[in-house]
Length: 72
Image (cartoon, rainbow, N blue to C red):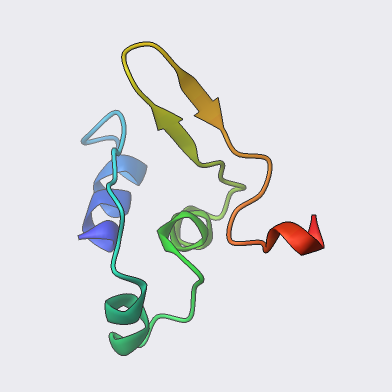
């Protein structure tokens, strides 16, 4: 689904992609070697990516993804 959505966006058939949490074990079991779909999206699109969490009152863009706090 992530690959299909990315392809549709790159071809201009959709204007954006919204994702939900992804089962990382399923991603890895499917043969994909990404820490999460944020990195997968970046690789498929060939561009840097940023993860944003949003609600009606707040939008937060993460400074890091999939990085232990002790490594920050």
